[in-house]
Image (cartoon, rainbow, N blue to C red; front, side, top):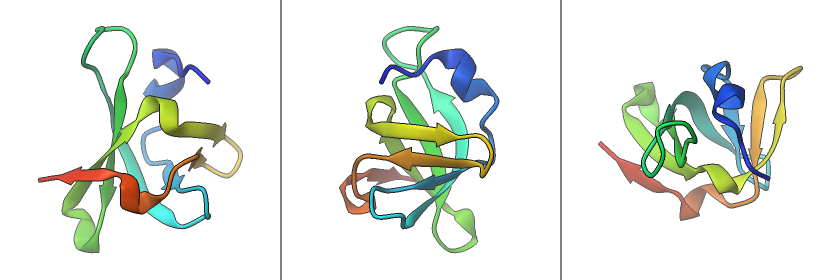
Length: 84
């Protein structure tokens, strides 16, 4: 599933959950790399007092549920890289 930049612009604060339903964190912002119009990844705040950021590849998104405010992934949270 290709995720358009307009889809990700309005999702700040959504919960991000892995394929098992475990919470990864809160969606912070889209991250752009190869193209200024299509996001390559998501920055997700996680951890105690939200001090850690995780990088979620945009192609790992399985579905976006606007009613419940959850972004579902097709990968496990242990396979995601963290920074800062």
